[in-house]
Image 1 (cartoon, rainbow, N blue to C red):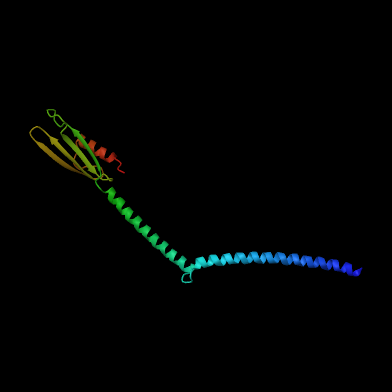
Image 2: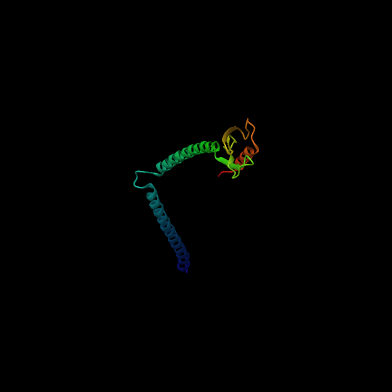
Length: 165
């Protein structure tokens, strides 16, 4: 009787050890498969050994630094260009009218040409039957040092209202 009773626990211990060994074998195979995948991915990233991840990262950082400098330079150039555009005489308005009662066809006109700051000039051409006269008046900050006629004031106000894109 003692042989059979002592064999039962030994068999149970052996079976338990076999199960533990089988689980360990499965875990080892799984770990081996994952390690092989990591090595394959590393070889793809590492390449043929001529380049490594650190060099690639350094090269990308250098490229990003150059791009940042280029963007800063472009922003500076854009600001200068925008100021040039604001100073260009691009706001224009024309008012046509009859300067004299005996003339028809609204041949007289006043034209205002100013920049975004209101600097520029007002041109007026007055046409009569026997003569024509042309006047130019400077404008600074939307005002002229020479008095403007109502038609010139109207042209200047219209030119300053325009919102060029």
